[in-house]
Image (cartoon, rainbow, N blue to C red):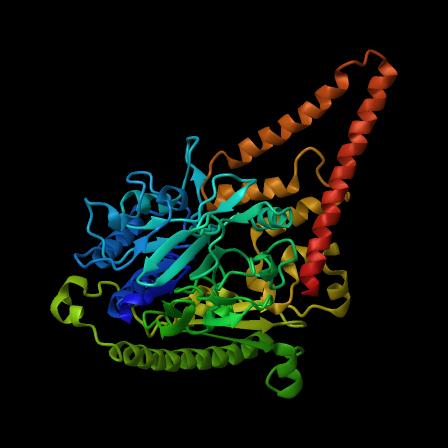
Length: 566
């Protein structure tokens, strides 16, 4: 019966606080997040499960924290009974620094719809002036608004302890792994330093019977990022039943069979579009997972509180070739003609986005009305929606323009004529050039190409400043990379300094790398009084450091070539 069925609302990558200073889009992330929690109560979910990136910023603003905590209090707290129990040692599997147990078991709080979540790469733990690493998730956890799991405090030894849940005769082992640097995690997985703890049976051995195993992960999937910069499906244990994959924003929520073939993978995608990429243009969903015994069913639910987004791509060279007279590169009025043609294309995208938005609202309303909830009839005002999409007719559009042989247009000036029609007038157009066959073969060996300045269309939105800086360090004009400082470590430090607001990231990284080099140099001085021996050691040290730099450069070029081949 219903007493044996787990109902779990699945969502991920809410990115609360995204574009919060934007007058139009500032409330979009909160509207979608509130709708997810409203749907959870509407469908009678036992709890909500999140696979990372609840927040967009590593250190959310007070406005974002205030809105988030208000939404969680309104939807997660109540006087109804929680109909499942936790069987595992909660101090090992949950990060609860106050009570040491789940928030709904705290006698001083009344939580009737718990939220379980892991951290993502946007809200992962960092040091803020002290020795202890804290995440924005810790703030929600210490306020008893969220159950934070999947955090690993040991960098070189990952032990994933499950949250063991039981409702009636159904038992769920909930595994979680918060975001880590992809290359490091990949290396640890290859070295077999990632261990999954299994439930024990009555005889003391592993209890394989009756447990439905769920794994929440927030990492890169193997989709053209290089073999060492992602988690491969084959790394996940074969005995897992269902994997919820966060971090990837494209909604592929229907569970697909993995490459291993023994478990299924669901990729819920983000609830708000943070990049104007092709994957973000697909319709957003959350999911209702129902588990009874070892059987499960996933029902995808369309999200209505999403700003409609349409994207397209054109080639100006193809337009010139196939539509004679429309564009002519020799025409002195080519920029005027090109602008006129692109305006027509953008207007068609705006129309398509608005039509899709109307269909989405109809589908979301029909899906909501198909389920009746007695609680809402008596308690509807208490949880009335407070966040809505502002000016929904101001849609998002992105037109990729391949302009080989043509000049570009000023994006700001072009977008000014669409103010009031779209929510992103300053970045409607994305110009790029077609990659030649010769450049495709060279892959990451060329400085300009590997830096992402001349990339295939589908990878343009994935280019980030860390890759550009790392590539510039690797491919300096004299072809001699840095020998004392480590390019990879410096890139990670730059990421922490910019994205996570760690003021001492660069300084501390340089000091650590210098200290390591000084230790190596100090060893050569011990036991050498002969000047020739000392000179010989200095040459060996120089050769060693040059070889180390060349090895790292070769490793980087190999990764870039692998990405180009993908």
